[in-house]
Every structure is written in structure tokens, then in C-alpha cells.
Image 1: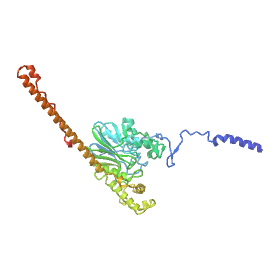
Image 2 (image 1 turned 180 degrees about the vertical axis):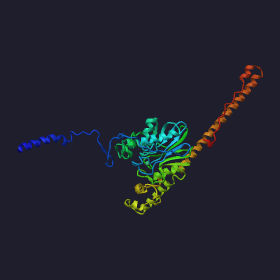
Image 3 (image 1 turned 135 degrees about the horizontal axis):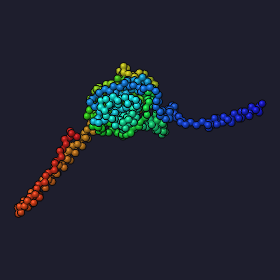
Image 4 (image 1 turned 60 degrees about the vertical axis):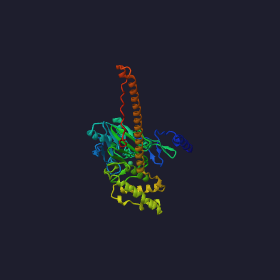
Length: 433
Ligand SMILES: [Zn+2]
């Protein structure tokens, strides 16, 4: 009996060996842990198709100026009920095409946003410009890429953080998943696929698209790792995205309060009549006031309490921003912002503040000086040319006298015709440059 039992046990052991040593189990797509040890999916989840009609975002564009229309999202976090429509995005009307500023939270959103714009002017979208990496601002990218063949201009950080590998402390991690794909109903996220930034710039650039002058301004690490805003100098419009919010408290979870202040100063350094925030409905000259006040108070109060020796554990109790209590998301986001600022301001250095007004003035002065130099150079050139022409004319006159005196023939007369002075280029005035 004992023998039989031991034979059975040995057989059982042999059979279970591959399992014990884990040899028969092969995982096709092993999952990995992120830097914080959280479980993450290695691959982008293919969009869920499902049945039924697409989510209806019921979008209505709001006209800001003759060139700019925007969609305004709810003052909430992304939820199933708002289907991610909780940020602002805009369309700029060029001569022959639309330019899209931020593409919203999904393919379906982008498709429906464009359908409304098409009613205003039936033009394609050839360029999409993205403000920053948060997924409520760019998940509509693939609609424009697939349907319009548009080029996506945006932050390099999108490619790195969402496609991976993310380089963190010498190690590589796969890209992050977006909130939307996890939070929304499938009829809102269907067809949404991450679309890469095609062109990323190192620094602020100026360009013209379809007759619209644009300045794409880099403000760096502000509300996120890499923020940009768009300035339309002829239209005096700033499309600020999330470095400015109104009517709700900002989310500084990925940002830097000093970077935020710098970003707002860069906006203030430009001349504008309209500003469209990333979240919020105020677009007039007061649009940035709340953000200016919020970040100034946040910095001042946290620094004060730090000076008083308040430690991180108590900072959210000690620093409140009661002036913003009636704003949306105050109770969710403000304590978080205070805590994050504390961490950041421990290393506060006044030199981190950038004087953008001075930089803009310097730029203006430089432009003026350059224009003046060009004008002077041109004037000098014209003068020199004039002198040469006068000399030539005089020479010809002399020749004419010499030649015409002894033999008065038609041929000689013709040869001696005074050459016409070439048209003198107009010297541009300094203001017109
Ligand atoms: Zn954001």
C-alpha cells in the first residue's frame, strides 16, 4: 500500500514539474509595472467597437472673432456623462483651410466638431496644433490624420510619454495609458487611436498658414511637462490652453507653479483682446485674471507658511485659497495644488522667474534695430547706385560732346542715348517691418 502511494506521489510530482518550474506557461504579452509599481498594460488597448450609434457630443461652436471659433467643454473631470468633453478646443479660419487648435478627447468628438465647422466653411484641416500632452486635448488627432491627411504639430512629450519608452532615472518604461480609454463609454472612444506628433519644435516659432499669421509660443514646464500657447498677432487672440483656466480651479498635478507664473507672464507680454482658456468660458481681457491671482496667492501663502516652519503634512490645512471656494473643482484640486506647490517651492529660487515683458521688449527693440539697419543699408546702396548712374550719365554726356561735334550721324546719336536709371527700391519705413 505504502509502495503504491509513493509511486502515485512520484508520478504526481513528475506531472506537476513543468508547472512547479513554470515551464509550460508562456505569456504572449507580459504585463509590466510602471515606475511606481502600478500594473499597466503593455500595449495600447485596441478601441472597443461595440454596437449602436456614436456618442453624440451635441457640439455648438462659439464665434470668438472673424477667424476663430471654439468649443467649450464642461467644468468637470472626465466622466462617462461628459464623455471627455471638458476642455476647450478651437478652429482658425484660413483662406483655404481650417487650422485646428487641440482636438478634444476622442475621434468621435473631432469628427463631430469638424462637421459643424464644415457648415461654416467647407474647407479641410491640413494642420493641427496641440497645446500639451493631457489627453483631453489631443485624442481627436487621428481623425484629422486619417480623414484629412493633416499634419500634427505638438509637444515632443506626447510621443515620449504616451508611446514610450519613457526615460525615467536611467530606465525605460512603456508609454502611459490615457484616462479617456479607461473612463468613457465605448461609443465615445471607438475609432480613437493615438496619433503621434508629426512635427515638434524646440522653441517658439512664427509661421503663416493659409494667410493666418501664428506664433506658437513655448512656455516649457508650466501646467504640464511641456506647454505651448498660440498667438494670432493680427487678430489679437491668444489660445492659451491649460496655462490659463477660469471659472474652475486649475489642476497643477503635473505642473510647476513658478512655470505657470512664467507662462502667464509670457501671455501678458503680448497684445491681445481675446484669450481662450483651456478650461472655462471667459474669453475677454479679464480671461487670465483668475489664474494670475490663483498662482500668486498660492505661491505667496505656501512660501509664508514654509517660513513659519509648517511641515508638508499640515500645509493643506494651513494654506487654503478661500477666494476660489465657489469655483468648480475647488475641493478636489486646490488642496492637491497646495501640496504640490509645497514640494516645488522647497527649492524655490527667485531667479526661476522669467521676466517675459522685458524679453518681449528686448525682442521688439532688436527687431527695430534690425529694421533700421536694413533701411540704412538700403538707403546707402541706393545712394551709391545713384552716384554710379550720375557718373555714367556724365561720362555719356562727355562722349556725346566728343562724338557729336565732329561727325553728326544718326548711329552715333542712338548709341549715345542716356541709359535709363533703374527703378530705385523704396526704403521701407521702420514701422512697416
Ligand atoms: Zn491639461
